[in-house]
Image (cartoon, rainbow, N blue to C red):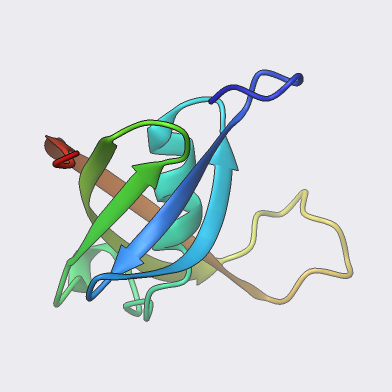
Length: 102
């Protein structure tokens, strides 16, 4: 269901429980937000494990499935001073869509 600002809400499904809500214009945007909460690897080259992220779109029967991973890296030179020295980055890869049974 699309909000007035054009964004949609996606609920993270973990072990059958709906735990967190992420919003985004596209499912990938919400998946990237969810992936940043994963335990980060020290660098993009040292990614040990990837997590499966299942995001149910509110108001529909669709569950978007992503494989996600995160890592930390030094902040950019033009980053604001208040930011930490290291930031968490994430990436996701779409695995498919499931439809819930009615």
